[in-house]
Length: 390
Image (cartoon, rainbow, N blue to C red; front, side):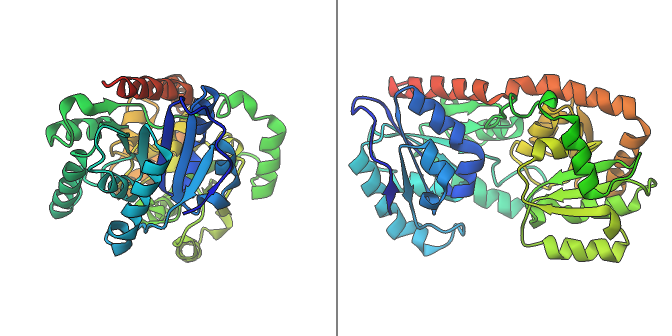
C-alpha cells in the first residue's frame, strides 16, 4: 500500500476515505466528491487498486492509497492480507468516515472494519444490488445473504434506484432508518448540456463517421462485456426496416472483437462504428437520434443520465435504474433480450422525429434532479448527521 501527496488538512477537520475496487471507478464517478469536500476544508483520501497511477485521482484527493484486492469476491487475498492492511490504514490515519463503493471493495472493507467500534462511520453506496428481479433464485439468495451479513457492519446504506430501495427495506439489509435513497452518483449538467456542443463539432463527427445527408446515428456507450448485451443492439440494428441508419459503439472491452465479427456476418460493417474510448461523449450523443442500453442489469446508468441531460432520448431495457429514468416518456423501454422490439423502437425513433425530440426535452427537464451538485448536497447532509452521531 502506498500513497502520494502530503497531508495538507487541519487535524481537526473531518477525515473521509472513499474506497472502490478499481481506479477507473473513482475517476469516472467520484472525483467531484473529492474536489468538493476538500474545498470545505475536509481531508479526503481515496483507496483502490493502482490509484497512484491515475493522475486525475492524485489531483482530486489529499492522499491516494493502493490496495491489492481482487475483483473476484472469492479470491483468498480479499479475506487474509487485504483486511489487515485496511485496518492498519484506517487506524493510522484516523478517518471519521469511510465511504465504500462497488461490491468487492464494499464487502471487504466492511468485513475488515466490522469490529471498529464507534469510529469510523461506514457508508456503503450500492450501485445496483447483485440480486434483482429476474435473476436466478439461487444467485439472488446468495447475494441477499451477503448483503445482509455486511449490512450489520454498515451505518448508512445509499441506494440509487427505487427497486433497490424497496429490496433493502423488504429484506432488512440494514435497519430501516439506515436506508437512504439518492438519485444516483450525479451527472454534471453544466458539462452535459446541449448548448455546449457546437455545430462545427457535429459536422466534424459526421465526416469522421462518413455519414451522408439524411443518414442518422444510434449510439451505445458501454464497456464490451456480456451484461451490456451489445449482441442485442447489433442484431436489432441489422433487423431494422431503415437500412440507411448507422450504429456507433463507444467503449472498450473483451467482447469487442466478437461484436466486430458479428457485424461482418450480419453485413452491417459499413454502417457500424467501433469508436473505442472517447472523450467527446457530448458530441457523440448530440449527433445521435437516440442512445441504446439493452443491458440485463444496471444500478442507475450514467450513460442514460448523460443522454437525457443532452436532450437525446434513450431506448433501454425495462430494468431497474433504466426504468427510473425513462419510464415517464423520456424514451422507449423494451424487454431484456427482445431484439425485435429493440429494432422496432429504433425504427420508431426515425419515423417519429418530432415525438423523439419531445422525449429528449422531457428527459432534459427530468434530469435536473440528478445533477451532481444536488447529489453532493445530499451526501453532505448524511455525512453531517453521521458525524453528529445520527
